[in-house]
Image 1 (cartoon, rainbow over the protein chains, first blue to last red):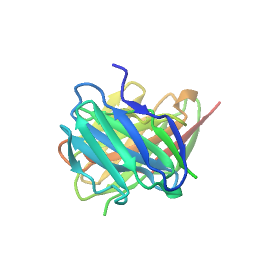
Image 2 (image 1 turned 90 degrees about the horizontal axis):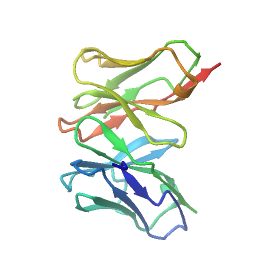
Image 3 (image 1 turned 90 degrees about the vertical axis):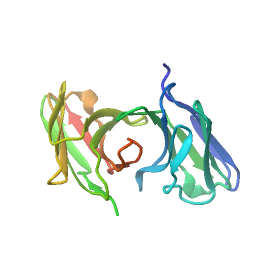
Image 4 (image 1 turned 135 degrees about the vertical axis):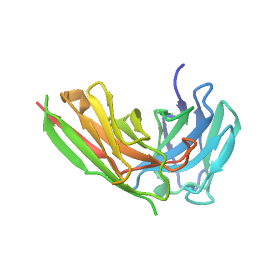
Length: 111
Length: 111
């Protein structure tokens, strides 16, 4: 398996624009997570899905953030409108048990 | 609220032993995980302790004392490639879904 695949790897956008991050989890994994990493706040869990159903989205910072998982092999995290403070590395991870496998992340810069 | 405390940085020479402590105060506890992250990379799973005691995996060992809300990661025979950030993470649910990460410990290995 190629592991968790995220796209794009880097994204630079202007404030106010919509940003969509994409994730393909490892086949067979039933849990999917979206994390955000910044120097100030570390690794924060934004939302996680189990069997494609959102279980806990309490980490989603604002209504500007939304996530979907239409099927077992794809998930998106959307930010609309984006703001400079959203600049961070966004990781997607998937798991079947105690070990979470992280993608390489999307480095988002909002200018 | 949830809190995990770990040292921000540890420096050691090649061949030495390093212990990274993690103390936690969380509303739930279903296990303690450790992840390694190299600069610019993704977090990768190292170990998981659900029960008290020591788990050994090669040069790395992890310990948990649930009564003390404390765990540690032990890195032995340090190598230059072990220079990275190490995160402890507490499982907050019993479905391996929600993990709260510590701020990370930067380990610097010197020749």
